[in-house]
Image (cartoon, rainbow, N blue to C red; front, side, top):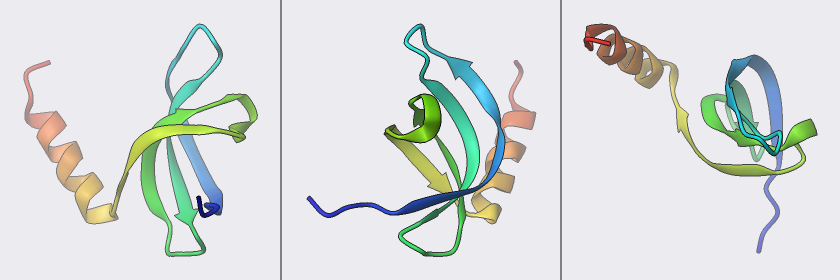
Length: 73
């Protein structure tokens, strides 16, 4: 399996934390030296390991915000 390089350029915040210490976070991440994207996924303590997640461009993040704001929560 090919290695994945990542650089967390900005940490926006933690959404939740599991009882094992993993956190679901929104960050700005550069994957394999590409342009950074907004990233929502689970991270182990210290960011050594990661779970599955999604990456969003700024336009996609804005659209997601608009959808969330329109929801009756």
